[in-house]
Length: 450
Ligand SMILES: *Cc1c(COP(=O)(O)O)cnc(C)c1O
Image (tube, rainbow, N blue to C red; front, side, top):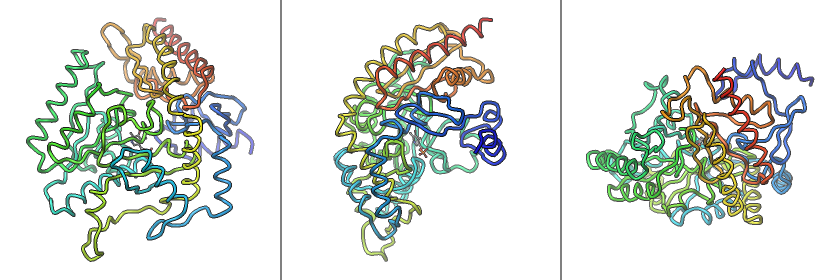
């Protein structure tokens, strides 16, 4: 189909996620193919995939082992239901996931997206207490700027005002505690921020623990909330508080899982054992929509019994446990092992640290934040006072459009430019990406000053 028609049809009939379609019309992008960390549009322009195709891609595009695993699975079957039945690759993948995730997580409940894995975590937490006869525990606690997906349950345990405000009367209420964000805190001191946040949580737990079912938290890094890093020891302390007050700890590893932060799962940085953990994005290497909610035997057992006891977890999706997706996930995890990819990613993260240190010197960069290959560059109008740009100037968005012209794709979060390259990105490609980001940010300054 000719390129003009593709664009016309997309403009007339498509409605893209998280997109003001007027923006799309002004700067349309239609991808046709990809190879390694390069994406190619319908005009033949090439772009480095600086955001891992929205935080998913691991080994680059068209990775042979994963392509072949999907083709081989196609010769057997594409999909059969998991409702009341199992299938071969979903069983094999469950074994692998149990092996890779923290020790206590021994049960795998599949779904198709991160938001669904969170919905499942919410219902599982809620019903766990109901099944145990503790009917008062019905509420959740979440962190300011937390993000857990876009479905109604997931936004109810999230707290990003601009995404959620319009739906407020549709959502159920959760308690929101302050995330220990260091850069914007008046003290600017990690220990102070950590202490204040934990004290506030302790107070809430002391007052309300009888009604709190679960604590929802992104693991080590808040992604969509602006790439905010937890101070060291914070997640571990939060785990202890949850145990002390008998609150289930639900850790969202949708963005941070599968090597992204330099460990297979970010909880490993602090040796945390969640009661429930959600995983998605990198699970298939960025190929197909598979997600999972992992939990412990303790929780599983609260649902187990004769049907007439009505303890069953009544939840499922049509494509849950899809064979093609599970086959892709298995092949993805084999490549992880074969290439010692998590160690590789940790080494690359060291190199990215150098790149970011240079970018941090730019006058319009207020802060750079990084854990592994999950990075944010916060641009500001005034580096000294940390004064932000006016929201309507959309400075970071414009910077990313300039990056696109220079040959790299990413999407900002407010004033934060996201840098999340695929784990397999080479040192040379990382250098190129760093150069493009630097140039685009420098050029913004020129416009600002002019
Ligand atoms: C992306 C994301 C989700 C939602 O995942 P989808 O697959 O987009 O529904 C949930 N939690 C976190 C932390 C995420 O980054």
